[in-house]
Every structure is written in structure tokens, then in C-alpha cells.
Image (cartoon, rainbow, N blue to C red):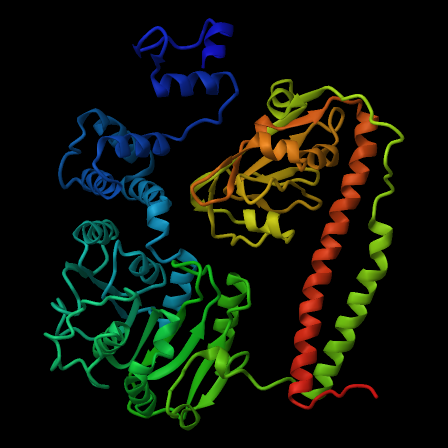
Length: 590
């Protein structure tokens, strides 16, 4: 700011502080930056949300107060912001304005760590077949799963949670949508608010690892149809609570820790669920599907039925990308078997009653399929290995060190118009409508994997030649886009070069230097580095020389991609060989 004040007479005047350490009005500075073309316009809803956070004690209170005001329940307690809330409602409508603020609340890091991701929520309500039915979430939090159920056509929703701030928000959303139902505050196990309610579906992201869940006082509770849960098995208490609220033919879909499928203390209850046909399926999800992100959680699907099924569907998706795992789950349920495995209940009723899907692997492929897969994998791997020497760039050590070349920062290149610096984008209010490139895609060198239903704003189309750089990563890892069609995702910088002035492969290559990694990176709270790409430097050389250097870096990216593909094929080849040998479907050559 000191430089701006010296160089521009139009820069806003201080509003406080001292001569040595002046203070400025944030909105005035933002407006000045927007006018100078140095900052994208700040949306009204973003500015309002920021001001609400500053005025309230906590984010939940900020959202609840704004929601009450938008629904006309009570005036906003933060008087200076009343006009802004009214203006947002007048522009977008009260409900749409509440949705905008709700999205910003849901995107806070603290909320992402405790709520069910939208994609997983949609999967759960789809599996529960909620359309036209009544739905209960006994651990509803702010109501994110109930929102997914309502979006999928549920006729009425009910929720309970012991967090009063969370249930206030859930009730607020229910009122805004005009949906039949009710939200209660309280401990669902100890003080069930819906004792006489039976519903068509129960969906829940259950609390894990509770040690004080009411074991002593609930010993003779009528909900324990399959046995009194041991003190160390709170999740099986929640399972029976959910089952007790199901109508005949009702379905419960519960997010569970993987230990609940295997702990010895719960084997008697698991056996009871199997014998009665109450447990329809267990799906093992990959790590990262929901918090805690370091472990692969399980989905349990319960079905209250009068006829016990002879099999249980076990689906292991732990090795799949999250989006693929969800599709694999839907395919398995629809086909009632593949690509999971329908396991006989009798085979599961052993001493341990271990229901972990990975321990009941699907039958191996037919011998011809294994042989074909092995041949194909070997041919593809051999082809990549043969190409590797030709992908190595022709570079050699200089006879003697060359003189240092003058450098220029990315910030200066952007200021002089030789490239554009765009992003990072923020959460939006409308689905992207196109695949979204994520930070993981850039780091892993894969195509855009983000769902077209992700919310991003503004929507920035990626073009061939764009350079994308993750804001947070273990190392500075730029990537040049070779095919357009996707949108820029969150957590990414975008550099768009003027092709007459800067070669994108040249810029991306030099961004990878160790000097730039040190200069542009700072430690983040997650242990990774946060990169400000504007601080990176690239050599100031003519465009023809840039293109020669860029050709080398382009070849190196192709080499990196080939090595990555070879590593994946190596793993695939090893797995097919092990499966074939273990099942006697292939033999070793003499």
C-alpha cells in the first residue's frame, strides 16, 4: 500500500492509525483496485458475508441472524448492515439471497470438516430412494443431508441434533423452503424427539467414537432389536436407532467408520442384522470422500423387510477416485451384484462376522479375461518404455557457466499486459455446467474431474496454452493446458500469456525452478506450501529464444506424463498377474 500511495494520487486517504502505520477503509481500497483493473469485482453477497462475519460472534450466528431478517422474522441485530441485506433480497429474492449466504457459510473450512459433502449426500439420498417419501436424519447438524433429500423430491423431512446453533440453521432452511417437517434439538439416543415417528428413509452421517452415549441408562431400550450395544459400540446403537424409525420397506443409508464392520465386540449385533435380513449392503468408500479424510468410510444400507435376504452386497471402492467410486456404487446397487459381490449370509456368520468389503473380494475374472488384460497391459507398458528415450530433451552441460540473464516477475508481466493473472475463483451460486479442473487434477496430471454441478464464480473457461498453478501444494507445480473445454476450479492461479510476447511452455517451465519455489512459497497451516505466483521470476529473453526453451519444457511434461502412465500400468499389471496366479487362471512359462 505504501507504494500505491506514493505512485497514485487517487489512492484512498487513511481513515485512522498513525502516520507511520495508517489504516484504510477496506471497501474503499477494493473499489480503487477494481477501478485500476487490479482486482476482480467483489460480489455484493461476498462483501455482505464478510461484514456479517466481522459483526457476529461466530459464523452460525451471522447466517442465522441474516436468515431471520430475510424471512421477516426479526430485524437484523447489526443495524449498519440492514440496508445491505434488504438490497440483496430485493435483487435476488429472499430465498436466493439466503442460499448465497448459506453457500459461503458451508464453504468455510470449519464447516467442510464437519459436514457431509454435497456429492456424497446426493449419493446417500439416491440409495435411500427418498423421492415422495418422509426422511429422518437423527444427527442432522445444519441439515445438509436433509437439503439433499428435499432436492431429490422428499415429501417431508425431520431432523434432530444436540447442537442448538446447528438445528437453528436447519430449521431456518426448512422454513425458507416451505417444506413439511420439523427440526428438534436434543440427543437422539438419550432423548429421541420422534419416538412414535416412522419414515420411508433415514439418512445420516453418524457421530463416531462416542464413549458417553448413554449405555448405562439405555440398557432396556425398546430400540435394541438386535441386542444391547456394548459401551464400545456406539455406532451400532445408532444403527438400531435408525432401523427403529423405518416403516416396512423403508431404507436407511448411514455413513459409518470402517471399524464398525469388524470390531469383535459388535459381532453379535452384526450377526442379528444378517439373520433378519436387515443389512442389505456395505460399501467401502475411498479416503477423501468425507471427513475424516484420511480413512475410507463405509456406507451401510439397511432395509426393514418381512423376508430375510440370503445375501449381502459388499462393494469395495477404496482404490477408486471418489467420483468413480460413487458411480460404481450406483451400478452395484442397480445390478444387485456386479461390480461388488453378493455374499451369502451363511458364509458371513463365522466367529468374527467381519463385514469389511475388502476381505470378501469379488471372484476373479475368467481366465481368458485375465490373460487378455495381462497381454494388453504388457503391450501398453512396453510401448511407453520404448517411447521414453525419445521424450528426453536434447540438453547438455554448457562449456562454461553463462552470464546471469535478467529476470522479470510475474506481477510485472501482468502489469505490462504480457500475460493475464486470473483466479483463484470462489464459491458461486450456480452449477458450473462443465467439468471443473481441480488442484488434484493439476498435481496428478489428469483430466478435469470436478463435477459440472460444482459451484464456482466467476466461470473461467480454460484454453489451450493456459498455465494453471495450485495455490497450495507440496511443491510449485504449474501445468500447461493442452485442450480446452473445462472450467478453472478453486485453489488455482491461471496465467494466460500474450502469445506474441510470452511462450506459455517457457513460463511454466521456469516457474518450476527451485528458486521460484523458495521465492513464491510460504508454509501453510496444513504443512504444505502456499504459493503466490506473482512473486515468481522468469528470464527476460526474446520470444524466439523463449520458444526454444519452451520446446524443452513441453517435452519434459510429455516425459512426466509417460512416466506417470507407466507407473499406473505397472501397478495394474502386477495386480492382474497376482490375481491370475492366485486363482490358477494363468501359469508361469517354463
